Image (cartoon, rainbow, N blue to C red; front, side, top):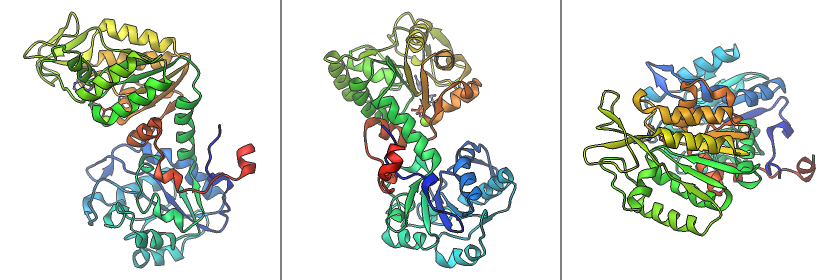
Length: 400
Ligand code: ADP
Ligand code: MG
C-alpha cells in the first residue's frame, strides 16, 4: 500500500508561486500564539518549497469567525511567530482575494513567504463557493494541501481550489494519511485500540470500524458510561452519552473476533473539580451523588498490560479527567504504557496529545496525529474531501 495522491516532492515549483493550505488554527492568548505545535508541523513542507525556489502563499483558518472580519481572529500573531521560527519576514496580506493580495503577491520572490488573512473571514470558505475557490487559485501556479486537520471539510481552501490548479499533498498530510491508514489496513498484530475522552458521539463510529479490524478495544474516559448504562449499571451523575450506540456496539462485539474491554473499577468524585471529595470505587457502580472521573487502578493495570502486548497501539481519548490531578492516574498509566510499548504507537485527539505533553512523553510515541476530527473520519474509513481533491499519484511514483 502506498499513498495514492501526488506528493509535493514531485511538484515543479522552482520560480513559481505555490499556494499552501496549512492548519494554523492555533490557540491564542493575549494576542500571541500560545502553542505553536501546528505551525511547526507544517515546517517540513514550507522548508522543502523554499529550498526548491518557490514563492509561498500560505493560507489557513483560525477559529470560527462565521464569514466576517474579526480582528481577534487575525492571522497577524501567526505571521509573527512563523517569521520568528523561519528567521525571515513573513508578510501578512489584508485578505485572501485579489484586491487584498495582489500587490504584496507581485513582489514575492523565491523563498519568500506571504500569509493570507484568515480564510474564514470570507463567507464563501465554508460553503465551498466556486468563485472564492477560483480567486484563490488565481493567486498561484500550484496548490499544496498540508492541512490534515481540515481535510475532512469540503471548503473553498481545502477542496474547491484544487479544481483550478495542479494540486499536491503536503508532507504532513501525506504522513498523517499513511500512518493512520496503516493502523486500519495493515497493522502489526495484535492491534489494540484505546478509546476514551468525552466526545463520545463523535467516536462511536470509529468503534464500529475497529470491531472489524482490531483485536482488542479498551474503553475508558466518559465513553464507558454509555456502555454501563446500556448494561443497566448505575452511573450516578457521570457524563453519559451514546447509550443506544453503545448497546449496538456491545451486540456487534458479541459476534466479532474483537474483544471489547470495559473498566472493572473507577475513581469517583462528587463533582468535576480537583478539590472534590474523591474515592476509589470497588467496582463500576456509581452511587447517587457521585460521578466517575477516572478508571481505577485495576483497570489501569489491565489496560497497560494489553498495551504492552500489542503489535500496534492506537490511543484516542484520555482515560479520565486528567486535567484534575486527583483523576489523572489512569491516563498517566496508559500514556506511560503507550510510551514504553514495544509495538508501533499512534496517538490522536487534541486532549490525548495534551496529556502526552503534560507527562513529557510526546517523543516516546511513533506518530502523534495533529488532526482530531480528520483522523477519526479517516480511521472510520470515510474519504476526506481535502485528500480526494488532489491529483492522483502517477504510476511511476506509486511503484517507486
Ligand atoms: P480527545 O481530544 O483526545 O479526542 P476528547 O475531547 O474526546 O478527547 O475528551 C477529552 C476530555 O474528556 C478531557 O477534557 C477530560 O477531562 C474528559 N473526560 C475524560 N474522562 C471523563 C469522565 N469520566 N468524566 C468527564 N469528563 C471526562
Ligand atoms: Mg478534545
